[in-house]
Amino acid sequence: CAWKLCVAVLVLNDDGGVFDAGLVAAVAALSGVSLPATMLDDEGVVKLVRGQPSVRLPLRTSLVPLTCGVAVQRSGGGGSEVALLADLNSAEEGLVAAAITVVSDGDGKICGVFKPGGRAVAQTVVEECIALCVERGGSLKLAAGLGADGPTAEGTAGSDSPAKKKRRKK
Image (cartoon, rainbow, N blue to C red; front, side, top):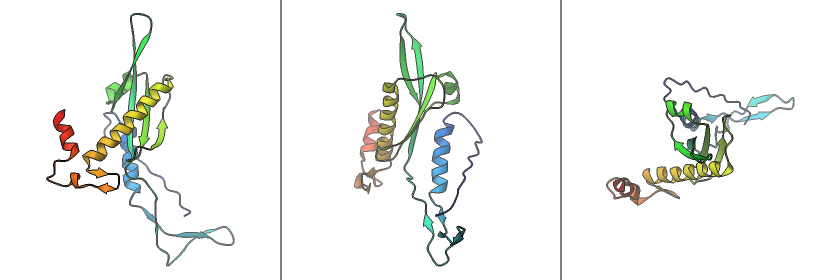
C-alpha cells in the first residue's frame, strides 16, 4: 500500500483524558478503512491496481490507553511519597507532577509508553503504570465477556459472568 493517512481529532469538550480518548477515537475511525490496492510503475509513480481487492488496515482495535498522573507528596522526614492517579480529570491533570500514558492491547502486550515533559519519574513508577494498564485491559476484556479466543459463554446475555460477580463485590 502506498497511502498516507492523516487523522485529525477535534476535541469538543475537555474534562481530562484527551490523549486517551483521542487515541481510541482515531483507532476506531481507522479500523473500518479499506484502501485500494496500489503499485509502483517503472517510473516510480504510484498507480491504482484495478480488479484487486482493497486492503484493510492491520489495526488492533482493542487498544487500552491509560494515563496515570504521578502525584508527589512531601513527607515530614524530608523524603517524598509518590501516588498514582488513573483517569485524570482536567483539574487533576493540572496538579500532578508528571503524566505517563501506557497503551496495551487486549492481550496485555504493551504497544507504547508516552511521557510528555513534566518531572522525571523512577522506572518503578513507570512499571506500576504499565501494570495498572495491563490490569485495566484484563478487566475491560472480562466486562465485555471476551476470553483469550473471543466471546465466552460467560459473556452471553443472562449468564452470571465473572465480570458481573466482580462488580457485585465492590
